[in-house]
Image (cartoon, rainbow, N blue to C red; front, side, top):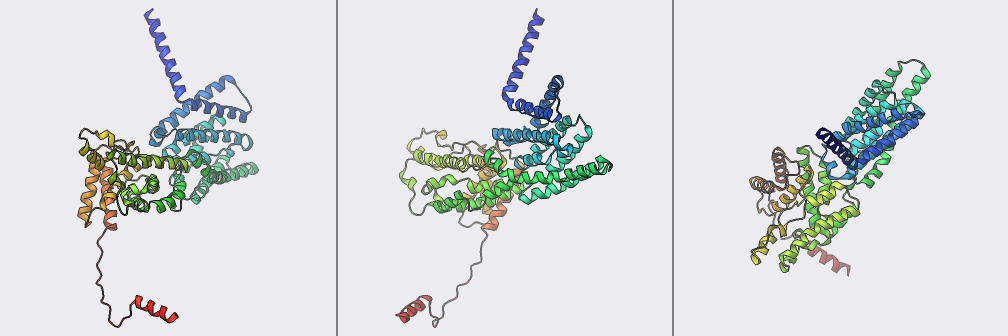
Length: 482
């Protein structure tokens, strides 16, 4: 009796785990059902038992090749949009391949289109995961052919390698040419050069497939970026154009903040390159990180000319104003559909740090005031580029307080600020290692020393007595005209 109860409990737990898995990953089960339907449509037959087995194979394939891969990519944990966009491209790509196979045979299967889109938008790891999925799932269409699986694996791997660092649209077309040549060679080997008409037809189709796919990729990329707010490096560079409406408004309404953002971008980009993360994201994120300040620019010291309005405010109100620029910035990011990661940078570049000046000012009035009442809303930086911008933001603001910025003073201040932020544990969730921080300090110092180096004071020549000044010349000319 006890054995039966134990077995029943184990079955109940297994069923609960299965239901929990389905509720959390429902999109996988539904997407693969669509894929299988179109596979069967392309093959013109339906065997219920075989279809169930193939459906379970497809679902297992997704968990093995995709879920394990993308679970290592930090951005997939931050935003569901990455997950849904990834599986949408995966599903639509496989459906198109199934339909294309029914009309053009195996040369109609496009690996370049979905794999290049995923790699360009989400990185190398996601691209490799999608390559495994397409190479193995396409074998189901082709009667479980190992030869074609290996063939598509080669094509997908080359696609990932060539599109992993795309910064210009022409680079996509260039990558497609190389993949086209590989496909043409592989198709020629596969056909053994027999039956000339079908052989040459398949070779031509194999060659044209990636080229046509690249045209679709270039055309559809902006729509995916705008809809998902997941931007490629190409889209990021377009946003980084200083003629963007938000940046133009910032330069007019808060010129001091704009100038600060441009200098910050140079620091962040250099540091990102040094530790081999995305320098384009670091630069463009720096441009937009303080766009919320243009709502109340006079409350930030870089935009103040005469008096400081905080002098007449209670510290708690000043705290609210400072927090407001983070909230206003994230609202503007959503309104203008800036990338999700840039909105994250706007929220995270202050982390949950204490606004020390206003906290100490409030403590003079009320000694029982709590630190939590004067913290930024956060969260802490969740990825390396956001952590770099937090460090660069604090350093760029502090470095201007040095009266005589010698290399030793700059290095001392940079090291002190980085250590303070690290000891406050603001970088715990960013993924930055101690080795990364050493390299970042080194790069910050190099850039700042070259920016604030001492300049030669040129001797001023005395004006000769017989030399007519500009003012006198203007006066003489006006009298002459009269």
